Image (tube, rainbow, N blue to C red; front, side):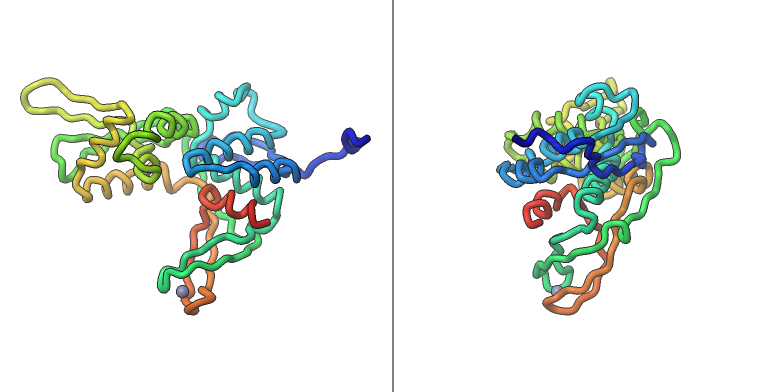
Amino acid sequence: MFTSFVNLQYPEYEIITPQTHDSYHVRTLTVQEEERLKASFVTPSKITEHLNKCIYDSLVKKPEKIKTYDDFLKQVTLKDRDALLYGLYHITYEDIRNYEVQCGRCSKTYQVTVKASKTFNTHPYPDENVLQRKVEVPLPISKGVTVVIKQPTMFNELISFKTLNNQPGTNIDIITETLIIDSFKQSPEDGEDLIWDDPTDIIDAYLSLPPLDKKKIHSEYKDKFGQYGIFLKMRSTCIHCGEEEGLDLDLVQNFFHMVYEV
Ligand SMILES: [Zn+2]
């Protein structure tokens, strides 16, 4: 009867997280884990929960401070997760296969396969404070309103999905867009400062903004946090119309699709 292979070591890959600068080692997924992923019927909001668990289970080395799954969720930013997922994907499959591209010109979809390591770029966050840092951004159109932005962790994402998932008027895109908002503040000329920091209030406040304020929030986020991470860039040519375009691959969005088609 088969128990396990003797002294067999799975291939490992070390990842230094680009924003928190921690070292993790992931091992390849097993066929069994892959089959489990394929079998799990997942709604969009469940996908990230499965991904987080999948990455955690594949860790063979992690920093001292990460003792539990909860620690892991709180100490890893969403940009760090991109890097871990890249590592997991790279060590399991080597190539990025069946990545689905939608052509910017003709809107038809097609699939590409690329050598993962050829697409890889990293831009590390320059400081050690990414988990604590809050940045105040005065809004250009809604005068007197300040938004406080942050780099969300996997834990922030989980809480928001749990709190907001079944609420009318929200969808996964809006939840994801507002994860970078810590709170809204307003200082009226007469009266006390107002602060909104509850996830539901943040979404309602966000939806009430003029689009130029929204644009300001996201450009500030990109400048302060979002530009730091890993980037998977490639050029691809549409098989339908011949348009050539540059792509930023998003493994989180495509992970299940890609695993399923392997
Ligand atoms: Zn096309």
